[in-house]
Length: 167
Image (cartoon, rainbow, N blue to C red; front, side):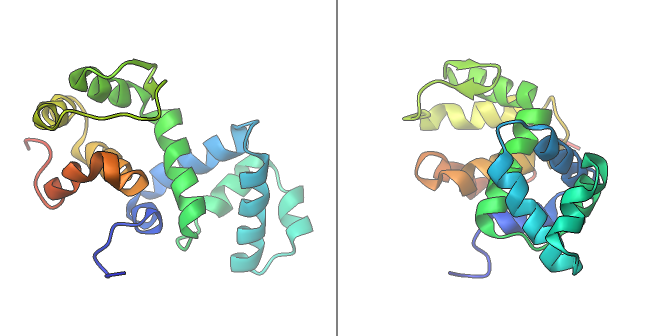
């Protein structure tokens, strides 16, 4: 594995502190994320040298602040955090991108797991979101797609390092 390989943990580190806090708040608000919350409690305890019981006793906001402050997340946890961030804060952009690709979705979520975006539509879809959303959000979203499913979204990886939005 090369140092330049895109990983969820590298994307987590690249997020702004505000994005990480929004993600952490979404994690503690998500009722279906009990396993992820337990893993987050263990990571906070380990990295902050707290007892897990002490972390568990904290209110959701304090747990979120501690979690957002962790820069070293295992890839599976970082991957889940990236998904939570986009689902909780970037659904409109996700929907715009999928609309531009002609992919059916409901509020940014696809119904079909076997998505095959048409290569010739990718550039137009990227431009559709690059012209409407902040470049750091677009970049993180596109890199998350590549990182989560390189077989489907690998063509987006060629865009890494390119400006994604007009300044």
